[in-house]
Image 1 (cartoon, rainbow, N blue to C red):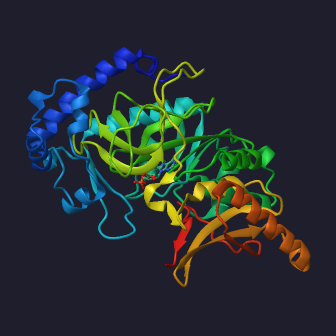
Image 2 (cartoon, rainbow, N blue to C red; image 1 turned 180 degrees about the vertical axis):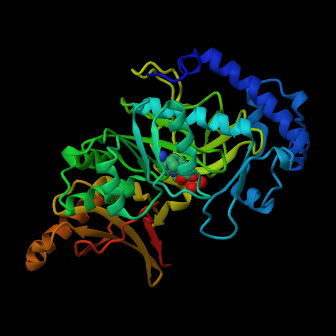
Image 3 (cartoon, protein in one colour; image 1 turned 180 degrees about the horizontal axis):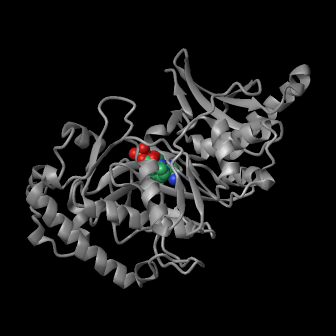
Length: 430
Ligand code: DLL
C-alpha cells in the first residue's frame, strides 16, 4: 500500500515544483527568524527575494555540526519558545549534543514521513510493532512510534536492552514488526538461538532497521536468521530523525520524502555538487520544518541519488545504502577503508560470526589495520593449523576488497561486544 499516492507517485515536474515553492518558503522563514541564516544569505547577496531558481541554493554555504554546536542550545530555532512542543538531541559522543525542536506541525509532518516508510516496508493496521530503540533524547524510538500508530499498527514501546525480555514479549505479544538497529536485530537473533526459541514460530514479518548502516550481506544474514523481510530506513536528528527515506520490498535504494527534504550530493573535499548517480557526501535542506529548519546540512554520510523508476510504483528519488560516514573513513597507508567494506567480506563467511571491529594502531610511523573477527564455535580453537588457515583466508578476502594488507585477529566465540544500539565499528588507537 502507498500511504500518500498523490505525492509518492507524483511526476518529477510536480515534485520539483513542490520543492521549489517550499524551498522559497523555507528561505523566507529562516531569513526572517534566524540571524545565523540571515547573515549568511546577506553575505552571499541572496536574500530570498533574489532567488530565481532552485540552483541558487547551491550558492549558499553549508551548515555543519560545528555551526549547530556554536549556537547551542536554541540559537538556530526559528519559532518562539511557546510554539516548540518537543525537544530532542543527538547523542554527541564528544562535546555538547546538538539540540533540535519541533512544533506541533513538525510532529505531524514527522508522523506523515514515517507512516509512508511503514507502508513502504509492508506495515499496515493490525501489525504489532516492537520498538527496541531507546526512548529518550535519541529520535529513533519516538520518531517511529507516532508514524506506526498513524498507520494503525499497535506499538509496543519496550525501548532497548533486556534482550531476554524482548524475546519473551516478541513471542507472547506476537510482534510482527521489529524496529531497532541492525546490530541489535542480529544480537536478538543470536540470543533467541541460544535460548532455543523456535524462530519459525514467531509472528515476526518485517524488520524496520536504521540508525546505522548495514550491508546487503548483513541484511540477508538477519533475514535468514529471523525469517523476515529486512528493510532499512535513514534519517538524522539534525534534520528530523528517522523519516528522511526508507526501503520498499524491491530494495532499489531508500525512497526519499522529497516533498519535505531536498537532497544534494557533494564532493566531500571540494564541496562541489556532483551529478545524479555519483557517490559523495549527502547534504540535506528541510522544506517544511518550522522549529528547526536547516539549510544545506552536511551529513557526512556517503551515498548516491538515483531516479530510475522503482517497480513498487513510487516515483520518488532514492538514496543508495550509506557506505559510511566520512568521519568513519580510515586512511591506512593511503588507502581509504570503510567498515562496511569489511562487513561485506566477513558476514556469511564460514566459521566466522557477523561481529567485527576495525582497530587502527601505529607501528613506528606506519598505520596498521587490525580486523577483529569472532569464531562461531570453540572447536576450531583445538587446531592451530585450522586457525592459521582460516586467518589466511580472511586476510586474503579482505585484501581482495580493501586492496590493503591487514592483520586479522580471530577472537573466541562470544567475546566481541554486542550492542542494543549502534555498534562501534572503529577503534582508533593512534
Ligand atoms: O540515528 C535517526 C534514526 C533513528 C534513523 C532510527 C533511522 C532509524 P542520529 O542519532 O542523529 O539519528 O544519527 C544520525 O546515523 O548521519 C548516519 O550516519 C547514521 N544513520 C542513520 N540511519 C542510517 C542508515 C538517527 N539507514 C546518523 N544507514 C546519520 C546508515 C544511518 N547510516
